[in-house]
Image (cartoon, rainbow, N blue to C red; front, side, top):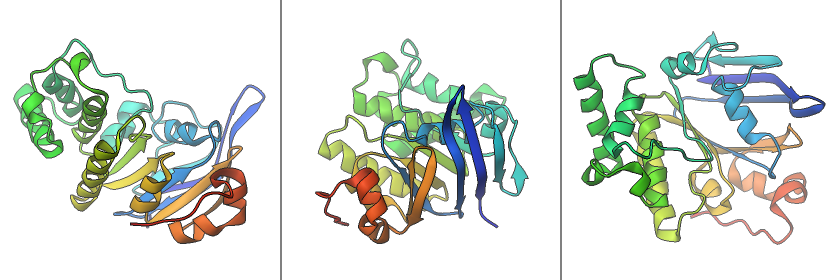
Length: 243
């Protein structure tokens, strides 16, 4: 049984069908990428999977249980964590307190939440900045904090929405290493990313969406050679490289 199964997912906003019959299965331990042009419906799929938007039609089965119509906090407690494309830390709170907020998704006692937050900060290497106000962090550290808050919920499945955007090459490499370490520690990942070198390097499989509909899915080598994908998204100049 897959960790999460999405079947026939449909979502419209007024007359615009943002997601149209989207299907995807993610097995435990995988890193699965989701790519497509701006406005293709990628973030909408994340919002449907995490309860931010209600589902018009279709199934979302997580660990054998339907999570359609669940509230975001209920889905989080079931084991789905996420980052957001637009990062919004609590700017006037410290890095540690930001992560404690995430930890409270799964615990009730402050001391337990603080201990969990400290473990996560050490894991992502933000512990030296635990007392810094979030608003004073660099973009890279804010994105790392976003990851830390999500990890503090102890997700079985982590959804990352363009976590590499705005990072320089060194910061990108550090984030790639961190994502691999997250997987090694038992978390499955579903990633939206526009940096092709990153998504092709990290992903076990990639799904491509265009106009709300999945074009195809497969391993990176296959996807990069698919004429439909090249036409809809990659462009003829794209040359596949995997490191």
